[in-house]
Amino acid sequence: MSVTVEQIKDAVWQLHKEQAIELVKQGLEEGLDPVDMLQNGVIRGLQIVGEKFGAKEYFLAELVMGGKVGEPCIELITPHLPPSVEGKPGTVVIGAVTGDLHTIGYGLVSTQLELAGFEVHKLGIDLPSMHFIDKAKELNADIIGLSAFLVTTIPYCNEVISYLEDMNLRDEYKVIIGGTETSADKAEAMDADGWALNAVQSVQLCKRLMGKEAQANDQWWASDKRIG
Image (cartoon, rainbow, N blue to C red):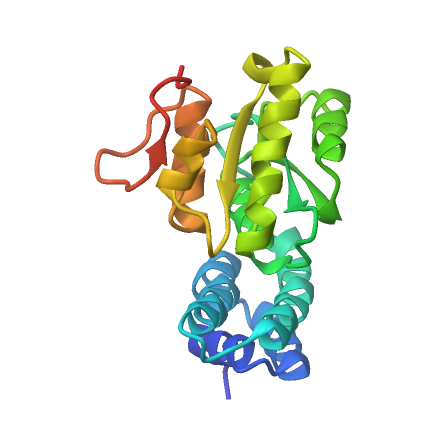
């Protein structure tokens, strides 16, 4: 029986790692569209994991497991994706701030940005604030992405911005935040450059911050102070 994208999605959100991997492998062998497999299969499955976490149907263990299910599936699909025809709109360094151990959120954002042609450097989890700045300088980044899933880790996003200001580097980088407990209001309060509701909309946010036009009906948020 041929593999369907729906089966891949269900295996991911139901946290069946081996089944998800085998379905992806079979789908690739059968010529299933890799973009469809990624977007509507693996990524949609991971979004459901995040939704269940937000609804308190899943907990931290399931959230972590979701990342472990999705990552090998994405790695299998990535080499089969078509190259972006838009060229590289910018370079992003992204990771989870101090005290945050979740990869699923910034991993989804990274994948979507890569599909849109961005050069993305995934830095890891539980990172000290200066690590983001050091890597942004080293890799000549345009955007620093900060992931904070927990209320207790959000202050570290603000810390990165404060360090940039103290070092007179604030105007060198756009800073975006994301995670379950973040919001547009929190981003604005700490003078971040932007926040997006989900991984797909983060692409439009980053394009806008890089001076690229977003679609008129795209939902995104960014601080007006720093666009352009």
